[in-house]
Amino acid sequence: MNNSFSAEKIEQRSGDFMLVLLIILLAGIGLSTLFSASYYYGNYKFGDPEYFFTRQLMFILAGIFLSFIVSRLSLPFIKSMIPLLLLISFILMLATFIPGIGREMMGGRRWIIIAGRSFQPSEFVKLTIILYLSNIFGKKHERVHDFFNTILPPLLIVLIFTGLIIVQNDFSTAAFVMTIGLALFYIAGVKYGYFLFIFSALVPLSGILLFSREHRVRRIIAFLDPSSDPVNAGYQVLSARQALYNGGFWGTGMGQGTRKLGGLPEAHSDFIFAVLGEEAGFLGVLFIIILFLALAVRGYGLALKFRENNLFEYFLSFGLTTSILYQALINMAVVSGMVPVTGITLPFFSHGGSSVIVTFIMCGLLFNLSRNKNNIIGAVS
Image (cartoon, rainbow, N blue to C red; front, side):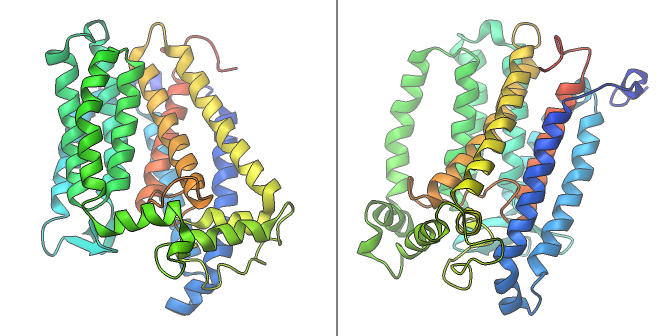
């Protein structure tokens, strides 16, 4: 019998429905915020004010469908698929450089065209790396201090994918993947001396890469002093700050924001949090932050239940939760002017099929872990 759907799988098992409720709330609020943020731009660019809303709704439905599937798969089957997922991820990343398949947009060659639809393989890489490292460290946890046999092979895998993303001219996503990877190395118990060795190589290399492209340097300058170039590099940062300032404590009301009307680039995507801040105000922003933190509490609480006896599940829960939370916090920090501008989207809110679908798959995996009665030790409180 196929081990992905065993008889045991058919049994009714309760999962963490508080986790599901949080996902529904974030997705629902995110979709309504996107509708408000994209209404003007969709009408201006495509003659359809519901253009981005309709697409996002389709992405969410596809994500829900895939999350339901992965929530029903057995963990042994998921583990068995990891080598294939690595191979597929590698092939998709290479495909971005093939003329006619790869597409260059906004200065980066990050997309491929599949059946007339664009897809960003680096989003899939985030999930694949988490699954791969969780499996490796789950199996070799007792040998985690063996650098050449346990640390070096997964480190090379992470570096290969990070390098491919950098070649695509996507430094932000490369840094994100490396950060998530190193977070898993850390909780796996890798010696601090190995981290010192890794950072001694990564920090100088990152500095060279960061200053090797003009647009990256301009972003850093805009972060340090947006007013130095208010109509170019600093424009997006200043517009986002103005939107947050306009929102005040109570907000202007949903649909009533003005910065999205051509004054805030990428208002429906990377900077949708600024639209939320203007229209929902400080209270609305605080509520969304609480929802993301509550989601993190459920995810990390789930991970702790696995910590003693089920290491694959422990690492996977930690990695998935960290990826969603870290992505949200980075996006919010960018919009708030706390870190330089990146291309990191806000989960559940920003428009983009690849990001939305992968986020929902991650959530489906978290729910799968929460309902797996053979591996979890006690119910999630």
